Image 1 (cartoon, rainbow, N blue to C red):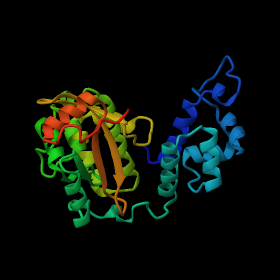
Image 2: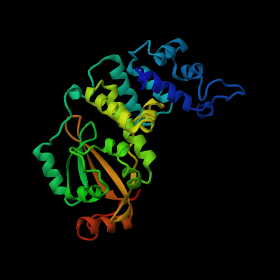
Image 3: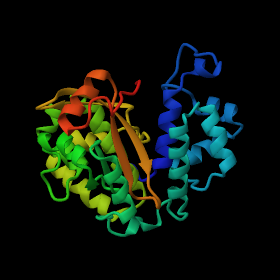
Length: 285
């Protein structure tokens, strides 16, 4: 992973945008994929020299106006814009988005969060800390992910499960996409200078090798939660699960609620969790 994540992200996005996307001529000979620095600088209204300093990490304090111009020029999605702003805050040395990043990861949840989980029973739902450890869950979540081995460790850690447990490659038919998602999430924590994330990354580098390190050294991308996750359940068969992410008060914990993405999954979850048939409706995805 680069020590200049902001510059690496800008360069990766520049190389991913085609000149035609911005109404520019492609030209016969191009030494770089995507846009040249001069082209991006022109569209964003910046000097080539300044853009070079940003990409090389020699300028670490771009203004919000500069970030906005670059995001517009590079046709960034809302996720990518948030990621860009986060990297700029970290790179500039400003206060982290999460002031508790130098503290240990949360291992408990507030009583009110526990009450929300109780209300969701028996729907599958769980609370995760910043290291993707499962710190609270419903019985529905246990029935969903317990049989594939995700909850065997104490505390259960979804990133470690994906990269170090051979059962994960069977449980997730789209394992490569799931691995990309989890590696990107951990990479984001590493940009915060999180010692606990660094310790986990070192453990995964040793245990998983290139399957993990290759993803950390690849182009920087913002973490993306796929709208539908496929799970090969040993009792219920293949399930298509839509995930709703709820960010809890503070900035470390998040709750994921799993909903059936089709009628077959809805019926399978009803049988698996003991929910009254039809009470958990499928969502369109």
